[in-house]
Length: 365
Image (cartoon, rainbow, N blue to C red; front, top):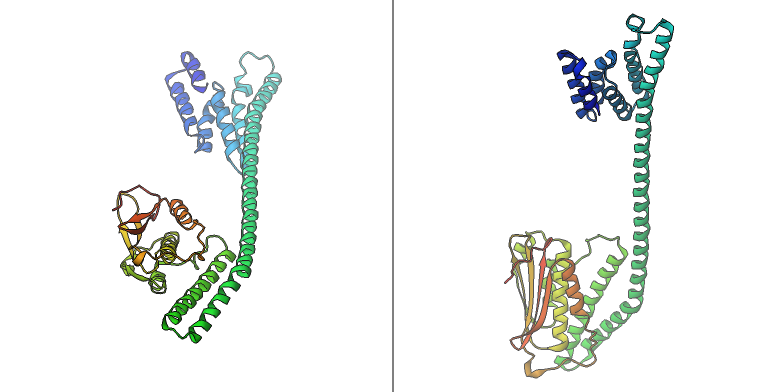
């Protein structure tokens, strides 16, 4: 509209005035970033009285942008006095009396100034109100998240108490009974079996305490999560013919996320437990390797056991709900990886692919 007004004034304007009008309209393109310079540029044409839209737009932007009201009112006064330029008694034109012309000029300048100033202040107040509403919405969302987090922490604490009351007592009693059997049994095989049971019970109690600590901790606390450095002890205390094939110092140097290391540890732990249940006496190889591709590095965990000697079957008393591998698969998928489990060379193989970040689905060996 300001450009159209300038074009309308072209037939009656000289070259200097046309250039001034063009500069005034061009200044409007940077009015949001430089509101005061844009208004200063528009003041000369305001004093001449030939352009109305461009000066009013500049005044509106100043009123909308400046934070201090005194500055806004000061520029409004300057704009008002400049807008009186065409109406001073020396440039009356066709008016018959100076008083009538001056009164009309004052009213016209006041309306020309008050309109953009009021609209700019209203727009600024509306913007501030919208920002305040958005801030309140963010505060309400944070409060809702905190309430939900407190509910999760309370539920985790309740689960920790239940696990302690139900599981800890039974495992402790089993460990004590195994220790007594180890000291009193006459056959070496029975003492060795009791020793293994006692060791497994002690390990289970330690892991249970760690799990209870995790349940009682706040979400995101990784201090109690098992790491790759605990794998040698896990394999050594498994009571199986198992060996670990991994360069742990090199793996630790890669600084894996805590979730990846915990998933690798739980994969090995569950695989060893399944070997004890279903292939007692089988040889087990636990391997860890790194896969590098276009995306982030990935940790590959392989647990392979041979066939059980003599077709040994697991004891029927050992419970097996079939949820272990399902839980491992869900844990791997949450990290963007995969888990494969199935027969291999007469035995069984578990393979987990655990990327350290968003997966690029590389072809792992």
